[in-house]
Length: 135
Image (cartoon, rainbow, N blue to C red; front, side):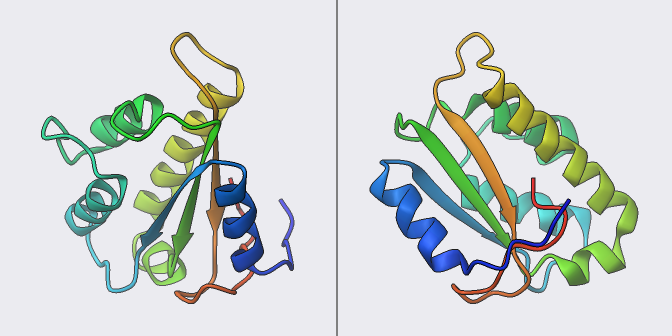
């Protein structure tokens, strides 16, 4: 995996111009798995069935039917490094779930319309570079 030196602002603008849905998941201040699930649920605007666990997050990321139909979806995860350092096991699980969701959308599985791209960004601002490990 490589470091992409381009700022996020242009990536977000290009995605929006292409008609993609853009979502930002800011992990600033997240210290527990429960907080992580609440943050993801809120930012993804998940329906009431979201259970707040790994399986529910994985299901939500391959469903996304409640979001507007779009040729793609860009999810930008910011301020992730403190959580990754504090909870490395949970961070590894989250990365696996994100990779599986990206693969699901890339492979055009039945019912999957569009693409999913996830960018991991260093800070909380709009112009930081995606971090190594971008999905």
